[in-house]
Length: 390
Ligand SMILES: [Zn+2]
Image 1 (cartoon, rainbow, N blue to C red):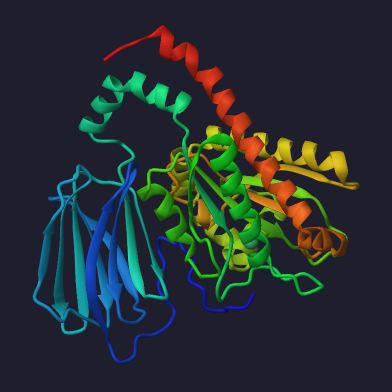
Image 2 (tube, helix red, strand yellow; image 1 turned 120 degrees about the horizontal axis):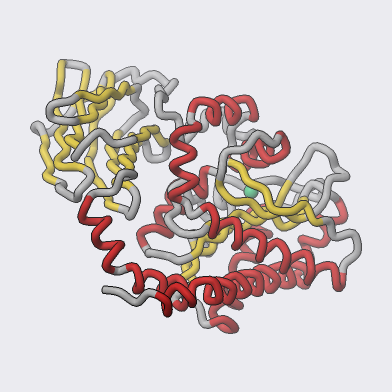
């Protein structure tokens, strides 16, 4: 754990621990509409504590940002996107800025602060779904099924870590961020060349990209799949193998340990978060295309193990697992996180430094994705032909 002060992304009742001493100014207010939720972001010039609550008549959710100033006049934005009617921001008293979200009806929400740059992020889930969206889905049912079958075209590849965050470091000094960047780029090239897919990278060089921005990229580009690539690490140097994860809450100790490391929080904090958040997490899991992600995970995991076993000895299949990975939270498409061997294991570290092995892993992931897509066609086809509508 290199950074002690990393703000967990998902705590709803979260208070930022660092104290705002001189007062923090609000820089801007913005929002984006996604399929399942609306994200409101309040940009700040320092870290601030906040408290959130909801009120009725009209239904609204408000956040008081403590020790904060609103440099400009009170602000009001009409949103009217079916989830939020409007957002207002005002200097509530000399030290508190209040942000009020007028919502359509009582909606589930989560809020958290992020650093670098400092901001308060509020996600309002439209889980009941407004009537417009429902009607839309019904009439476009056939189109959507076809899209699923034939148009898995755009893939977001997410090489883990980067920039100031090296990820796990092997006993020989190999850095996770370098290995996964190479594998990610190779995977992208193969998907483009051999499988005719469009590829978007969350990073294609050695830069730091915050975890939540990675799925935001995927959502805003309307990607069909999200693939995050990592190398594993364990205190036990003997531990080895490959495993693939999808997003869910988990009671498995090892899964929690891996998620805690990738999320950069302690195992204790991970367990606490899961406990307090099971409701929200169940929603997230549902929204995150759990079944599809599970199928994608199996397809990729099988392809990696089968391909590598042909030429390498002692390839251990650690299987498909699930855990709460921040980087997968909020993704609106099937999404997985692949741990391509243990960088902490001497032999696997050595393999990871070889271009041949890395390329082999990349091409195995690509064929796993390809297999997933052809299975999708088989599963969805009867539906498309059986009930044409709209
Ligand atoms: Zn990692």
